[in-house]
Length: 267
Image (cartoon, rainbow, N blue to C red):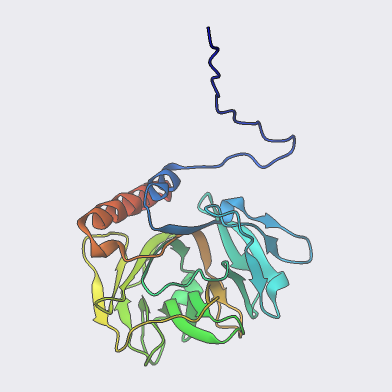
């Protein structure tokens, strides 16, 4: 009688000292979205004494790259019980996602802490920016302006960098806020919401968005001090498509925002 071979999948335990799995409900929801591209979580970053922070994308395992003359000032904080990425003092600093993290259509969902001094200031705060491989600035993917700004007072929003057309919403208040930036390149509509996923402020961008090869998303703004300044970034989820493009995507986005609000204690 012929024998039968049965192959069982084996999961090997992590080595001693390996970082523990730190997955929450928003992670689980985002992981079910087919267009999920990158996940950056402050809680999974580590401090490198004298050299800022180090970490990897939690979706791909690819390294995150500190950028800028003040990259050593990137630091980890705790805001209202949640891990946060910020800058220790002012300076030109950012944390770059992997090459090709910038796509023609996208959705970004992020937890941000807009510091009270920044919220009242005259200057821009760049939470997310886009750059090419040479470090040339491409787009303001998520930027806030302080209440005393002479241009876009008390606004948070994004553009595709083509002619400076922005979609702006009112910034969140409190310790944490959840901001959604969605762009559908087929319609050229860029949409922004704060602490919900039902109503968006939208604007039509003037041209198709075609990022060059290797272009990447960056937390902060490494080419001058107009980075995240005194403010902080918590969890960031990026998707390589507009979640507002389909009914399924809209439902998934609503679930993710609701879970993030619960996780960050946002009413």
